[in-house]
Image 1 (cartoon, one colour):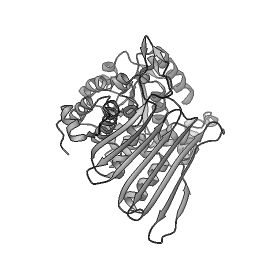
Image 2 (tube, one colour; image 1 turned 90 degrees about the vertical axis):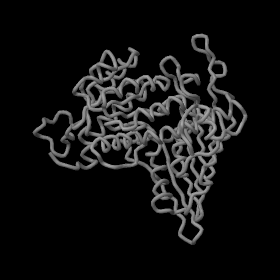
Image 3 (cartoon, one colour; image 1 turned 90 degrees about the horizontal axis):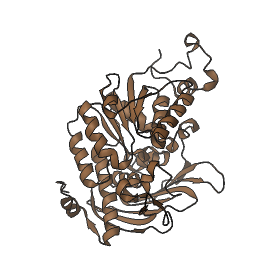
Image 4 (spheres, one colour; image 1 turned 45 degrees about the vertical axis):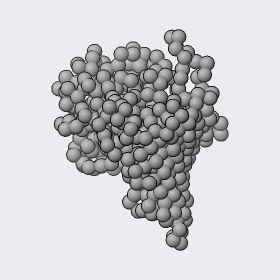
Length: 406
């Protein structure tokens, strides 16, 4: 078996046109040795994306899953069998049965947001490696409990803040933090315009009580990026937002939707960095934009998927410096086969980091502490919208009975 297989080999090993080959006839297309066995808890749309990425990443096999929704379970079984050309998934009867299986080394948790805390409380008993989807919890108090559960945890505990692996953000992080192209980052701006939240089982994402609110559920990705670029803890948050268009006439089992679909968020950091976030969730596209301004220049990156124009994903990054260095405009992308697996390739690299963590290889995966601070910013922004007040983070944490000082 070859070590460090090329990326081309990984692609070809999953090519359905080559499934007829016997094992002895495979060299370039020989599958990677499976070193880790995983189980998935929650196999809705995100859970199924994780199933595909475990397979494509190559070092892990998936034995089975647990999900209470029969429709999700049936869809996951069909998808996995088609994607793997015949491999079967075992459906466990409970979380305990999955986690107590001695074959299972690692657990992916991709259940609805409001269930994360209860699922984590159960899974940590078995000391398996954990990859927990974002947001790690719907409240600051629950997120802090997970921080405590993860402290001194004897296995890997990674948070699924995958946007930090998108091509535009990987390049921006490299330029800003490794090459220091723009100098000391002083202001950060991120915009997202997109379509409304998609349908979920029991429509849990239409209600703040179950999702944590839009700025926790969806935007924790962006607040993680703000925290990364600022390299500091948030000091204060002020936000405005509303439910202007989406789901204003929607109800489910007698309960009316209350999630916001637009917001402006301003964040002040302890080190003086200022950040602002602009969200609109009633646009006919997916559009993200990042602007970093520093002591030596400006970096601008954007990603766009325009449904009305029927064009695929486009991503770009531009840099202009103050000291006479040449400006640059570049296109950023991953191989199409990776981008098509889900979330434009970010999920694949999230899985690569998870496997590296299990192997003891240091990397830039999202820690539990980083997941906590992303929730803090989102929850503070939701509180600011509700009260109309600027939220002092230290006072906010004290009020939430979280013993963290800045």
